[in-house]
Length: 620
Image (cartoon, rainbow, N blue to C red; front, side, top):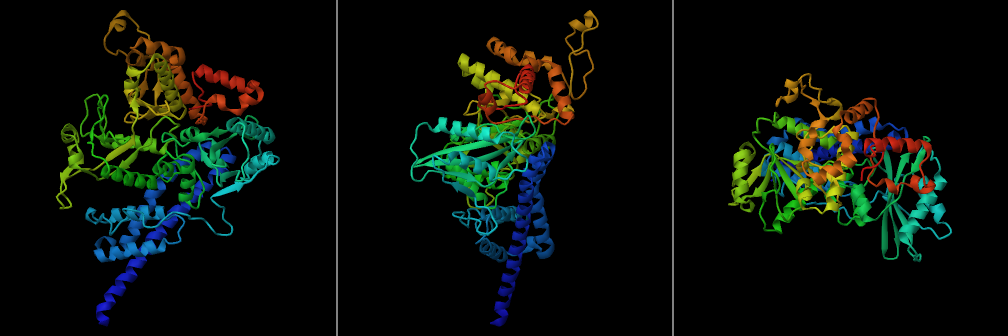
């Protein structure tokens, strides 16, 4: 009997050591994630905008690096890939036990899945070995350590102490750079709150709840919270920026779910937030934005792997409770991407084709590198975030026949159709796929739009391109079909296979013909470099519709001028970082305080107007 029990005890010890090593890997990852997120405040105070951008890019890579480190350790120390199933079952059970009092259990479970699926064969990917569903509840987790900050602070002002309370709310963040005119900023906040709430009676539970960490992105810091009065809750955010005099200013006050949805849009870069209990932040934010999926909130907080995991669980649940079929997505078919959707699900699936038309000189790896640029870049509200998956299994029966035929024709190398699990359920497996929010293609929107809607969409289209210019992105293919319209009426770019950094392009005017033969030639008679761009040649492809042309030339004619593009390229090369904010110019307090811009601001606004859009200011 003793000999029979010994291997079981040995297995258990080994399983515990593996679970402990796995959790060590996750803890290292989250410690580094926390550190770079917390340092965002120092970079903000020092106006280190290029450092902020660099930290944003590097943080995105942290997760995959730590997963690779953990997988290598498990292989080196435990020969993990050769361990029998009963060991892995024990590893998972021990890991669950280690997470009982953990502050980020849902993230640690996802990390476990990432490491395990990197080591094990796909046949192991079921409930016994990975976390198909969460095992540890994230309800009521709070950081109870004496020196820690709570998830949010609650303030209980009276009518007499309201101003002092708002002043204390801002001051409690202890920003080291002083405010320029904090008293007048607080007056503006109070006026905005009074206008938003109207005539109201303060109920017994009147309070202001504020998340304990600032949200940093681009050149702004955002104070996020909600006002509670009786049964009513009013979400708000206060953007804090660097002012014209070198100090800090509260730029405006945003209120309500719609303003917050724009702030946390899927088309914007991830925030940097120092948070010990991410699930508590997500729960707080969902109370303000109940329509926002939890997956997108985790993404917005920089925890995109957790967002990706939750999204896939939501997608699987949607498939179980729907019966419609995947189909080829409506609209003009792409030359390098095959795009399909499920009508009942608000996302599209994009697969890179195996071959392309002759005019598309590209490769699969080059296209993937373009999508990686978008993932790591500040998307300034104008590029949709993308979820990237490998080896995704779909029920074959849910696929429209025409879609299957297109996949077999254009993407055979990425497609597998089989009963790999031996359960009689035929699966269609895509080896690589991108998933994006579904939008109305701009070309379709313009065909169906009223005159007023068309004008607004064309203006938004130009604004989108100019925001991308400010972020150092040249879209490449600027055709209407490559842009979409969101629920809020914003125009967002979503076709990335031809994007370039603006600073890598050379913007030129078409040379003047030297003789009649050159002038009449149907061929390009001048020398063109591989990254030369001639903006004036955009016109024939974009402005065939007279109604579209009239609006475009009124608001965005400068997009056809090489000097516009080259000028912004030179500013970016000189180190200038544009301000891009998720609210309208008219909401900014500086207009409301004085009724007019200061002389310096007027000069800036004039320059911006000359550029055709507030590249120094606002991106809705």
